[in-house]
Amino acid sequence: MCLASQQKGTRHMSQPFGPNDFLTTETLPGGYFVADEKIFIGGKKPQFLARTFAYLGLARNAGSSNWEFLLGFNDPDGVGHVVRLPTEHLAGDGKELWKLLLRAGYFPPVSRAARVSFLSLLQELRSDRRVLIVDRSGWVDGTFRQFVLPNGETIGCEEEVLLAENLGGASRGYGSAGILADWQASIAGPSKDNKLLIFVLSAALASVLLWPAHMDGGGFNLKGRTTAGKTTALRTAMSIWASHLAIETWRATDNGLEGIAALGNHVALIVDELGKADPRVVAQAVYMLANGEGKRRADVEGVATAARRWQVLFISSGELGLREMLASDTRKAQAGQFVRLVDVPVDGDTHGVFSNVPDGMKPSRFAKSLRRGAAASYGTAGPAFVAELIRSGRLAEFDDEFERHKEQLMRKLNGHPLTPQQERVFERFALISLAGSLATEFGVTGWGDGEIVQMAVLSFFRKWREEDEQSSGVSDTNAAIVRVREFLLQHERERFVTTNFSVPRYMAGYSDDEAFYILENVWRDEIHKGHDPMRAARSLLDHGFLSPEGPRRLKAKVPTGLNGDRIRAFRILRSILREDDDASVELHGGEIATEQEPDQPPF
Image 1 (cartoon, rainbow, N blue to C red):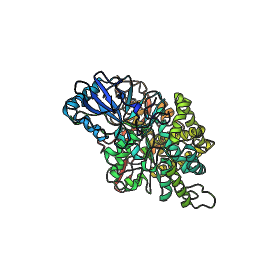
Image 2: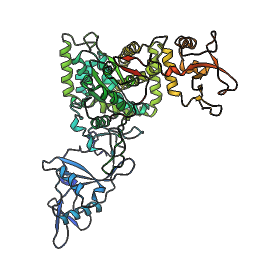
Image 3: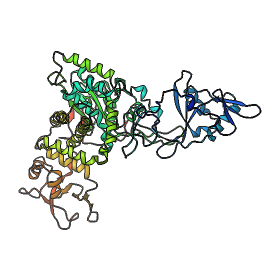
Image 4: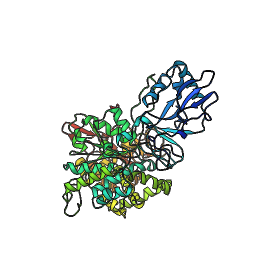
């Protein structure tokens, strides 16, 4: 049974405990007894210890450490509580244990002797029940048979699971209102003819698929002047999992943002007000959220604790895009930031951000009706999607299904070649497309056909790609330079021979202090696959990055010190890694450099 699952018919964490849940004389160790719902220790003069409680067993983490007692009781208002008492708090006088109990509304023994007896009782209690403590929402493990929601409820019952209490999912707006049919009528149905709404609803489901797809997180920023439409889109997206109260802002503190990300793990993270945040904070937060790891910190004893981890797709909005926002920062803006947080232009549709509105309804009124719907019906579609994924077993062979879906979408792009960075972004769009298509197949959205999801997602990918190429100056000519530069940045250390005695398994060529010598098959079949490799070589020659052997050649001989046979290869000067053209341009005093991870993120 699932300790925190309403869906499986077991008790919700705030439901009160009944008399049958509490310890009785029969279930207590010898020497203790219960009278009038109070626990006593026997003897000539029985000693009162405390109110009786429910002993729910022992909990521990996935590494079988950090063991805890699980106690259940009702507070003075009759609200049920499940309290985790670390076993280490039994050491000494139990002061920290008393604090935890008092904070939840359970009043421990008053006298010193009774408190010692109470600590002894805890150690004598026995139960075969074991519960797993997890520090983030989402999939419990790689079998993908159990999922923990941010409010602590679980889907799938492989093992009893508790979500770490300090995440506070329920208080942040996670939960549900209404039933799935209500949400379909008020949100999914009206969204069917609107590309943006289809996109954001599908994106809010896609985090569930990140782990099965072996992908990192990333974000999408809805960029446009129409404020009401963007806010409405964010609220409809959040309704997949929670109320609008779960929408966060970029102005959260470092610890706060890490906790928010852990809470949104494999769910969705909606972060509004990009334009009101400090550009320096946003620049580093984008890396942290997409890379899925917080800062390492020390506990009270100075021992390093494990960093928080997560996988999440996040959605934001702003009148300006990330590129324009970071233009006000005098430091370098890394090119990787624009891959991790993608600006999606949303203005310019038939009705502002909306493709269609109901007959006789103005866009503003349509937006208001969607916001009302999101306030009344939420938190049902996401859990329904997860439940169907578990029931269907589709995640067991998800790699193959995802590859087929990507190939299908790529064919619809009509063979338009993508740069390596564009391919990374395309994969994220493809995951969104598959999430929306699966949800439609499962009957969660009620859209009938996944084709409308694919068309909506591809329309926004095309918009992003067009703006990306305009912003970065990528043309058919210098796209070749970008491909070569990114290949070298990625493989410089592990695929190029620097001496006669070190040959990597997947060798791409040779390198010395001045240049790279790229093998012809790598140049043709990897770097410029799908493009004209000779035209690419001439483009690099025109820009001074290709250094051939003579005026009528495109290749040069590899130096004897690197290859005794003096084979010919494409000689690319190392200056390609430093040039400030396609991947590195000036932006009002700040500059976008080729990607380099920050040495010290602010979190």
